[in-house]
Length: 79
Image 1 (cartoon, rainbow, N blue to C red):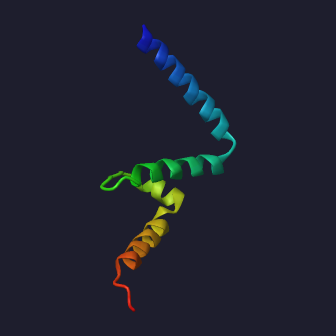
Image 2: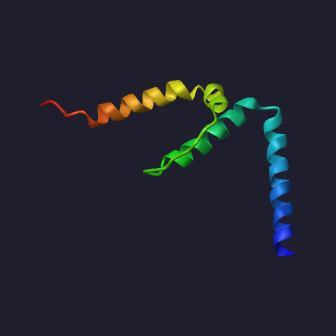
Image 3: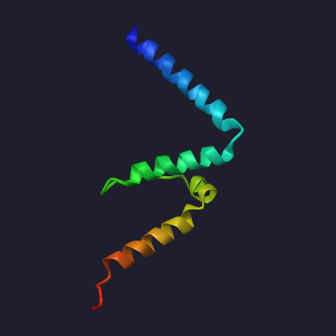
């Protein structure tokens, strides 16, 4: 019984979120990127993202910039 009530509350929350994002694709885009960031910020995390999401979020360029930043960070510092 408690599990059923929880499911109904979760479903209602998702329905409200869907209404908020329905007319605001930018907000949905930012939320998706935030969810991806939250998943990746843990060391050793692995997140599988569909190629359509990568195309939509322009993450190919972002991934390249992130990779470059990591290379710069790990490069030996010259004195």
